[in-house]
Length: 442
Image (spheres, rainbow, N blue to C red):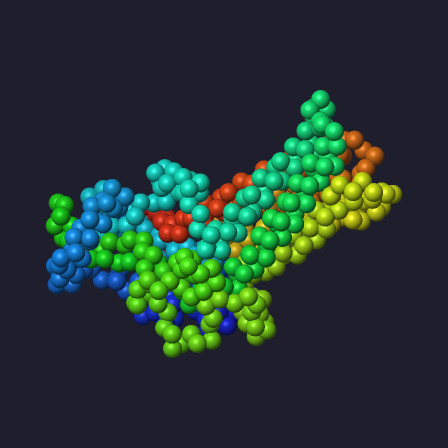
């Protein structure tokens, strides 16, 4: 651990009150900021289970019947694992996700664990994709952020057709298309979606679960297969999660009352931690949040969205077409796009860095990295649009400005939909083959 690592992080170390989880390693892309990733060893996963410890024979009646039914339903999705490790990442924690890393056994090798199937499996991907169209957890702020940005991106895609298509195919243009359709969709996309979504990002950041949340249940059972030996099974469990999204009755309330007692944080040592806060205290802001990459990225996003909102307002019909001479149009419409887009660039870059093990080392194996990457592409597109738009008398620059809005909007839509997908995949399982990969993956 670098000596210069922010020491305040360890006074707030996740799971420091949970005897089941032991911190093995923590790191981040910058030594002067809080670590963004760590891995913990779960005590139940360390020793080999013995027949005397098996809980299942003590069950009877409805409990035993329910357990057997769950085992039967999960049989097709459980896979053997040689080693299991719980990963903590600041982004995943903020989104209410609980990543699990498993090492698959070699052929004929003993596998003491059973875990859910890897989330990159086609069946798991299809399941989550279907969920993005059929499940609407409005009580989950992470889902709400992604949902708002997805709709906002679709509005911007529509706007890009209104602005760019007439330049490509003039015959498709209808009367005042750019001023009315383009202006109104720009206003809706900038003010209603980008600004509101960015505010929710700040609320998400200041309400990240700092006490740590395991989110998995570790069960012991007898393998009825060839070995007949006891195994440990790791299963996703909403009753072992105390993130705010488990409480479906209250958007800003306490964690769900159904959370199991062993999974709840120690109330005696967290009296200073609120279940929900609209504004952080000055002390928390100065000693904690200012060192959090996720919070800094959210602030950059909110700044960019606020400045960009100026161009959304001045894009409205009756305002945009009265901004003459050209310098007024530049000052009130194009320059706010450049400044706001630059804020989006900074924000997306920080979100990318948050997912990376080193600041110079990309993390393409993580979904969060791809989300930030596509948002970065979109941010460059919107910034480029504003910069080229100021070349009013250059038809080529105007064409490229509309084109930049077009591909930038699609990039934002890809990133937003991936974020929607991420918000519904609360228990990601990553799989590696070798022990070297297992030890190096963080």
